[in-house]
Image (cartoon, rainbow, N blue to C red; front, side):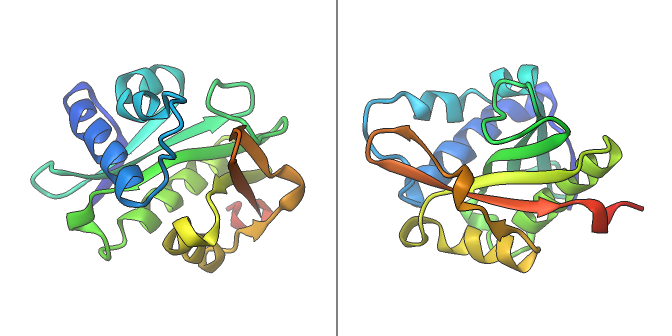
Length: 169
């Protein structure tokens, strides 16, 4: 498996995988917010942030994540000097192969390269996002309730944070 910046040929698969992961995971609330269109628009995200993709040896897209820093459109939790990742999605057929962890590690490496002090992210609650929350806890992220937020009425996103000082080389 290789994690790299997504290219034009990856965009359709990334959009499909991201929407499917959110639908299957119960993370689209059907509230008419249009978030499904944001998830499907991989090319739009790649213009505004770093869109990282995990691919198999034959180039098959296994998963993707949007990496951004403070001031970029998709960075909703960051403060100056911090990085954030959003819309982490893994193809159902590739789950259990370490794809999600590889994508998170690539985000952490990118943040350290850029000199960021922390990585932040948000998840849905345990009833919806338990596997993701387990991964983030295992990787050292800590719940940060003071950064929790609500993108639409009835949906609360739980914030997580990892200080990057221990990861700097």
